[in-house]
Amino acid sequence: MSSTRTAIRTTGVAVRAMLVLTLVLGVGYTLVVTGIGQLLLPNQANGSPLPDDKGSSLIGQSFTDADGEALPEYFQSRPSAAGDGYDGTASSGSNLGPENADLVAAIEERKTAIAEREGVSPDEVPADAVTASGSGLDPHISVAYALLQVPRVAEARGMSEQDLRAIVESRIQGRDLGFLGEERINVAELNLALDDGEGA
Image (tube, rainbow, N blue to C red; front, top):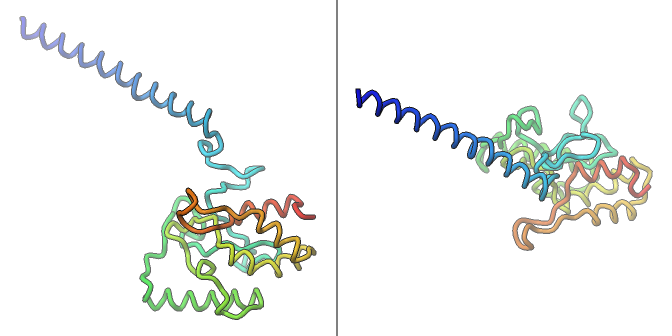
């Protein structure tokens, strides 16, 4: 009889503990962390959305036509190996080593195509223009790749190269913490700014 009573008491304690911990850690903690995120970093907590629901500033986008050809009025992103390109549900690189014949051939093909599109020598095409990032979702390009595209985009938009170069340079993001990584430019944010009439 006493062992049954002890078992019931122990079960009751366990159930109450589970309910209290579920409320405190499962509900309370989640609400507190979500509240802090919304209060201190609302943009980041909500996925860093671009204006008018045009994507996220954290995920690259394709600026090509239905045939995969670069739209001349837009700065182009770096290549993507994520799904069909910039697929947030299939984040990945190509997983091909630097000496893989397929990767080397793809890089050479991209370099030739970009050099022709931008009217430069293949030697002037930056590495990030022809290689995908590890995630396949990188929204940034190097300053060198952005500046390489200025003449084409300026002509397509009827702008002076000098004015467009100034806009590009005003959007350079510095190194993280002042020393990590390289200076870069968010392509989607730059293209969106141009569509919204910046520099017009």
